[in-house]
Image (tube, one colour):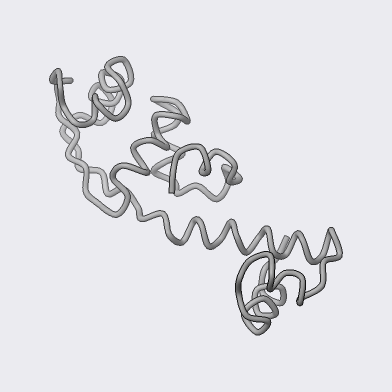
Length: 126
């Protein structure tokens, strides 16, 4: 998982915390935090201390913004695995319903079994 690949994912699928962070520090910085701290608790200091790991991740200006808004809070950064699966499933459903790809072709493209592809196609709403 990297910030560039996450930018391609529909923003509506982003976890709420990441959307909230993006409002204050921008999409790129929020996604960098998501990738760096996925599945962990992030203790945001009340002051933007130079050299802090958050500063190294998102830069000085964004770190100052984050500390001003979230300083003193512990943010639980969600793990990204379910987001990637959701995005993959939407792509599979899109390929099947909108582009007309057959199950056997989707098996090869996504490296899943025909049973898994069928289940995804039948349960994923576009």
